[in-house]
Image 1 (cartoon, rainbow, N blue to C red):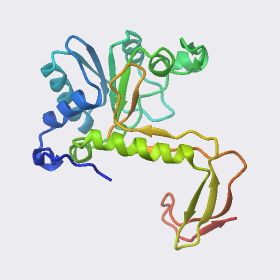
Image 2 (image 1 turned 45 degrees about the vertical axis):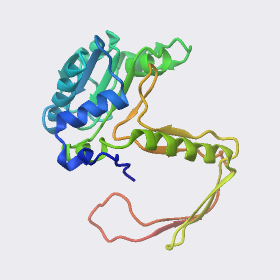
Image 3 (image 1 turned 180 degrees about the vertical axis):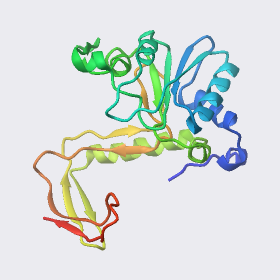
Image 4 (image 1 turned 90 degrees about the horizontal axis):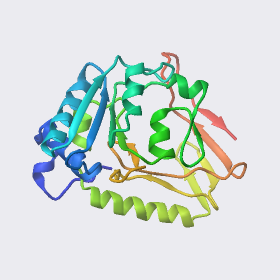
Length: 246
């Protein structure tokens, strides 16, 4: 669901990239004068979005820098220059990529220990969650049309509704999922904590997807039962059929 603002000028299709990026910089990440902003991106359509974020950051009198690397899959390593740029601990790190940011070779082989005494396999995660020194948002696979439609929304309403949904899940004991095709699943969530991606990344240690808008919870291990019917998966060009799991 998209949460449009009361201001009709914010309808994504009628806004320019720079206007949408100003919303992201102000309402999502709350960039301040003099803050260092590192934008990591790739050639192509995502670069267009990144350049608009660069311009928006300048309008707030921040100090933006863009670093461009070739697109990376989940199996590939980020360029060393990208890792070193993150190590410089800018106030804000933004990843606008065709696929992924890229893995951290040192983190995977040796690892980083955060101020929370937890071990991290990427310098980005260590600085964001372990040290809480930076704040961030990331947009893997983003395209301009999606950015224009899904970023200029009512963030106050989004955060309110995400909070309400998270409270409901926190107090809940079971989630029941049923479909016309036969799924009838009971998922135990007693004692589990809900998480929300509500576009509020305004403080160090905060980060998430943009576009935002998600509330999720993991099930209690070994306490779910029922039937799942899979009616869609990766298309392989072969005849489709339902997969029923008890």
